[in-house]
Image (cartoon, rainbow, N blue to C red; front, side, top):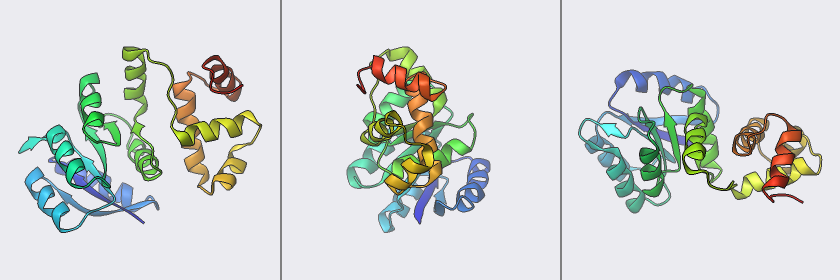
Length: 204
């Protein structure tokens, strides 16, 4: 099972996340740190699969720490868990090695979605932040390889259970991909999704 270490100086956040993650069936907490110095020592003695990292820690800058840990442990997946919802913070974290970005004001379920996504090799940005990024940057739609694969399966008429069986993943994982595709292509149903994909040249 996927192991997760939490680095956050808010004990209440840590206490909330531990049971949510441990009871999710997809991951378990291997430990937590209330200071970056403590987290650094813990990672040096044994790596988890994922680090949930607060950006604004009492003893240091989480963005700088993210860059440091990414350089030391390239295989470690880092998810920013923060109160910062600025475009610059998202871009800096992703540029410095983070695989995900979640704002604390969002539903706790976003944490589990992020864990699923980064475990599958994808980058996860919570819904609120991705909408802000698209509005700010107005860049062309960019899909991950797995999102493209799911989109192609939707285009040929496969339903969610069939996609899950073909990819050998949980149905919840497929639903997460579908949610991300709808968000990226500004769609609320399969018809709008495929229309948007054709408009962007993602499918024929």
